[in-house]
Image (tube, rainbow, N blue to C red; front, top):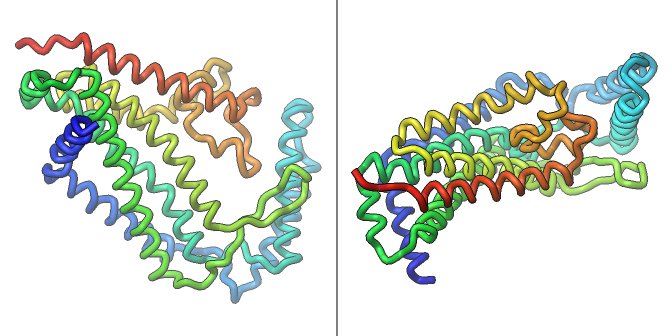
Length: 324
């Protein structure tokens, strides 16, 4: 146990002693500040002092019109799902009018919820570190020194992966704290009791703490983060060049969703990693990428990819010839 802790500490030292790491923290904080300024500058939503109820009533009328104009060629199952989603949206809008709940109110929690989109930046920064964890040892020529230690290759691999996840956790904590402070500065501490509305299994509108919604939003993003990190770690095991490993990993991240979008009409796309990363597609009245996709299916696919990525990483690292 102590040897594992020592190895993890050693990997952490390699990460944090590089100027690149601290530049990453500055980039993240700078992006959060910029996003906050942009949201405040270009916010066109009705405020609490404006007639937000008129906007909600208008959205209800638009949804009601949508219910009567659904094309029949879409198929009964698809029409039923869309109809259910629209009806749920109408229920929530009517509930807001009845209980005087302004959906456009800017609060600390809504600000933090908006900032959650920047977890993609955390993912990108962590991918750079993950893709560099093993390939860098070859680039620096330190792989032989690493492998002459008593620790097995398996233990070295595991501890490098843990160190990478810990780095992503630190980034997330910095992001969460910074988002909270920026939200408090721009929105104050009013609206802390803001609620999130959802349709329960009984078909009725229910209230829940906005804090839970914020945590859920970040939680879904963490799932995607872990999968991308694991994929990048596997790629790092396959390359001797850090630059190649980083470029290949970032390339997959950037084009993955594009590929899914282009081939979303094909049934096989549901078996790809990128089609299952966004678990929010099963919540909030959204439609999954493919009609036959479910939350359980995506979880199974993610677990399968997670195992395969680790297995491939292990095989590549265990069998890797470090001579020369």
